[in-house]
Amino acid sequence: MAIRKIYADLLQITKSMEADLGLDGLTHTDQQVLSTIVLLSNDGQSEALLQDLKVHALTKNIPTPSLYRSLKNLIERGIVLRVGNERSGIYRLA
Image (tube, rainbow, N blue to C red; front, side, top):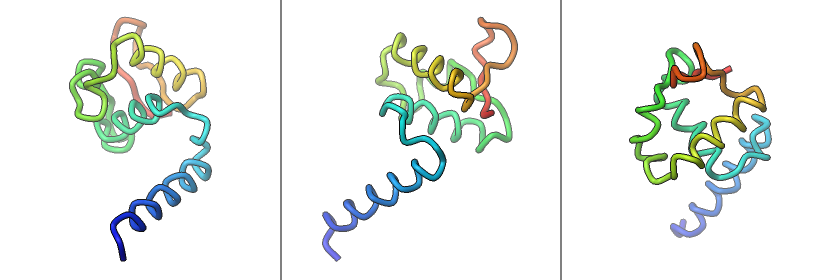
């Protein structure tokens, strides 16, 4: 199978999974931040620290204001929870 076909199939599967999980309305940045939290928290088994989000390969190139905006969006959608106070910088999956 040609590599382009595999790529197209993977994109189609990804879009289908996003819809199944109710994530199809997220921006690309929101998806990157959520994916990083999933990876850092071992799929919700622990928490993710803001300092780790800022340096992770998926999110290190996201400007800080955009990272905070995505975290706010994910919290408002009930996908991510902030642990502790607003300055704690600790997040977990809802």
